[in-house]
Amino acid sequence: MNIHEKYIKRCIELAENGFGTTYPNPMVGSVIVYENKIIGEGWHKKAGEPHAEVNAIRSVKDKSLLKKATIYVSLEPCSHFGKTPPCCDLIIEHQIANVVVGTVDPNEKVAGNGIKKLIAAGANVTVGVLEKECNELNKRFFTFHQKKRPYIILKWAESQDGFLSPEKEINKDRKPIWITNQYSRQLVHKWRSEEQAILVGTQTVIDDNPKLNTRDWAGNNPVRIVLDQHNRIAKDSFIFDNSVKTIVFTKSEITFSEENTNFEVIDFNQNIIPQIVTVLYQNQIQSVIIEGGLQTLQSFIDQNIWDEARIFIGEITFEKGTKAPVIQKKNTTKSYVQSDELLNIRNHD
Ligand code: AOF
Ligand code: ZN
Image (cartoon, rainbow, N blue to C red; front, side, top):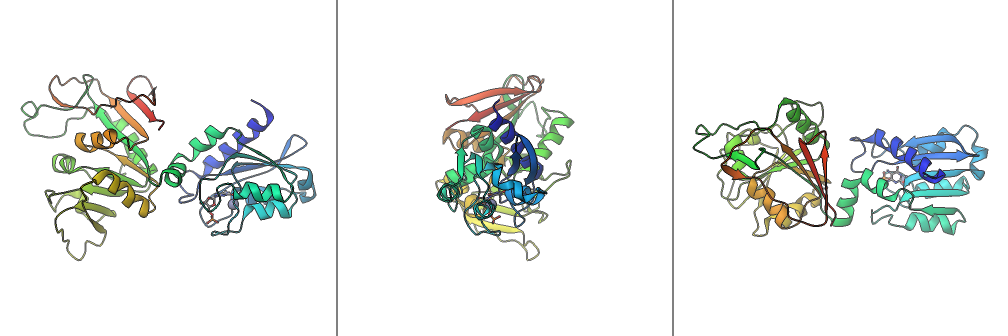
């Protein structure tokens, strides 16, 4: 690891302090170095509040050192007036000699303009240090701006022999059978709290009546997205309990009582998967976790509209039943997290 990488790595560490609080902004960290010593640090804490570079510059005690210093930022300094003024202007105002940038900002309002502005002002600018790591840090923000859709995580649990659920005769009372344990359940609630939306298909709601909230983890509930093409879901299901904002895609006229104010009903199109991701994009939703069932998961896989799959593999065997979704795709990487119970697949398209 060279010197630049060392300090950008520190920027990433600082940026991570903002996990969960910066939305819709990205997590960004910045350090200021003079004669190989860090003289200032900062990170972006919350949208509307100062950006990382501003906090880093403010933290430097002797501002006269800035002219000879290097500012490191995990994301290109912004060039636009958003909720806060451009970071570029502040860097130029303090005449900071060197700027090292992790990765270019995918936001159309910036997208290279920050770098151009700094170069035009005479700064010595280096771009693309630990670029992959800096992109990974804000995978949701990057996907949202580059692909004009949310970052999509598919999640399911399958038996040792590859089934989502056992055959109906075996499971006569149709109660959900737990493939995973209480710890994985808590982990799933943590995952839910990290994404802005959660989506399930009709059959999953009919079979499991899920709450789709984060009751086992301290964190925000994601917006619930439900597919109910033919209005088959009972109105007394938990997902219609008005406790969390819920978006329903349906072809039928669904009416809710006046107290049910937390709903949005959207016309179900023929081309439902692209429609969902467009609607989520229009709602400024940067990420979604999809928790079943088979048809819903497989549709996203078949249309190659997904970014990550998290698959629990239980010890139980079912022998017969509903087969788990299948991912047959070249451009992916597979890794097992904590032994062989959790498989993570990343889609690199
Ligand atoms: C930076 N440093 O720490 C962050 C940046 O509305 P604003 O003013 O907060 O601007 C938000 C946009 O600024 C955001 O979409 C992203 O492009 C950039 N975020 N830029 O120089 C930071 N958080
Ligand atoms: Zn900025």
